[in-house]
Amino acid sequence: MAPGFAAEFARLESVHPRLIASVAFVGLVAAGCGWSPPSAPPPKADTCAPSDGPSADTVAQQIAKLPAPKQGEWKQVKDGHTSNCRLYWVQVAQTNPQPNSEGQLLFFDRQTPLGPATPEPRPYINVVTNADDTVVVNYQWQQGQDPPCCPTGIATVRFRVGDDGKLVAVDPIPAPNR
Image (cartoon, rainbow, N blue to C red):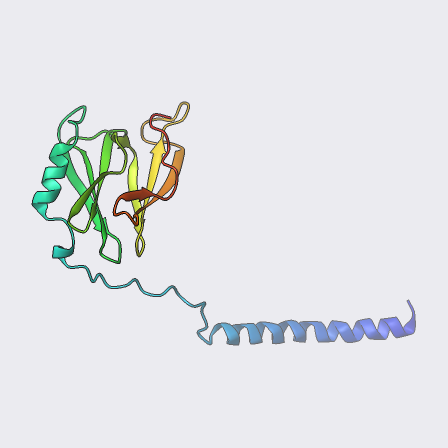
């Protein structure tokens, strides 16, 4: 080895452990400063009053208009609304449901019934979120050899009230019994 190279290598050997210790120390100090990425804003408080949505009688009348399920009766299992208090939804399911039992979503423009999301009931319906003026729904279906518990087909559909006051599916609704 050249004499200059050996001297430079020896100098780097002595600096290297100190450099690692310094970098580690600075990293620990920076980590202890309490910095964290900004969090999501807190959800808006629900400002909708019960009188903004459909009454229990209106919901019951709309459920009674649905064709009878294959087994049992329809019962309300979930409900919600958009944050602008205009589009309300009610999810109904069969009494004593199986994993792949059909259900239905009913929509309301405040107190006015808009009807079901689809003409026929579907299995595996799940409202996943409510936005300012839209309701987001996941439709799932069994594909191939999927067991009833675990459908792998999925589509997301957004619903809103159109300018004409009717229910609008912003995204294509998947065909039934795919």
